[in-house]
Length: 405
Image (cartoon, rainbow, N blue to C red; front, side, top):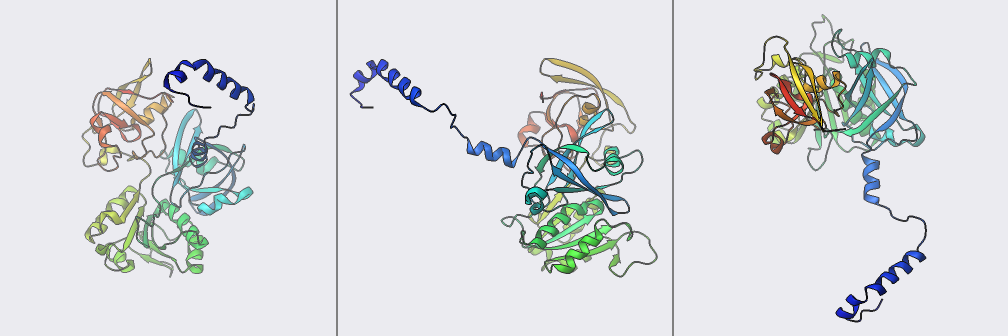
């Protein structure tokens, strides 16, 4: 289209309109628009992935590995060794979710028709961990779930981490390191991994045979089993004790304080407190320590900074969602997210540790307890009274504003 001049072109609006109509009439009826960036984002971070259980197998006397394959035409998104999946669960009438480290390797999710991922679940104590008890005891091949993945930053990053990695694991905290060991053995993760794995008993070590087999066949992976129980005799491949500073020092690459070794820590909270103290004693730089914690404290009253009641008290929680308002009971010993779940009020939770922010909501009134350790809120959220419902306990009657999901 020719340009004639400002006034002539402005006055020729009808000519421009007619030209547009001719172009539209000559265009194809097929919609050729494509947003490749959005398409890739959906592939990498789908809102949900439908999966089916294909196998259930014991990996210790108290732990089972569940294998999931995509179904209903869905495709597993790529993930890093050490990341986790959040599973939507319906246990009886309760709708909830639980995070689990992916214990399979990333390359196993890229195997075409045999694409899969695995989690490892330990049977919980009676009256506790009802979701783990249900997954461990009742899930069978053919059961379907809605999964959300991947999540978390507990993975090896060569731009951030040292080439030499020491994994400090306790109990079921070994699962992300099984994924890393598999990926290293496959040749698709470039780092050297030493696993110091603490267990209470030599007869109940999760994935022991697999870990030992990988260490035997791959010179970039080594495993040391450390037993804290009071067994009279231990097998020759196990040693007695804790994940102490002396043991860590023995396996470090150079002096730990020099920063030539990255330390990845995963296990129960009691182990965290002990191991992080040992790393501090050794002078390990904070940039060389990576931690992963799933789940809020089982009992907030055991935390030193807790200022709530010594017994269990039930408060009133006023929940605002759009124009709706609902008053529900909230126990002082349970996070606000659990109170919302009991009342069947939707509120996405993924990490259940106060880190990811999916359950973020606004505190309108009332006092709450948020543990200093594990508070993953941004500074702006803290100053504007936003909370992570999964890691916030009521200290009295409260009111919150929950997003409509």
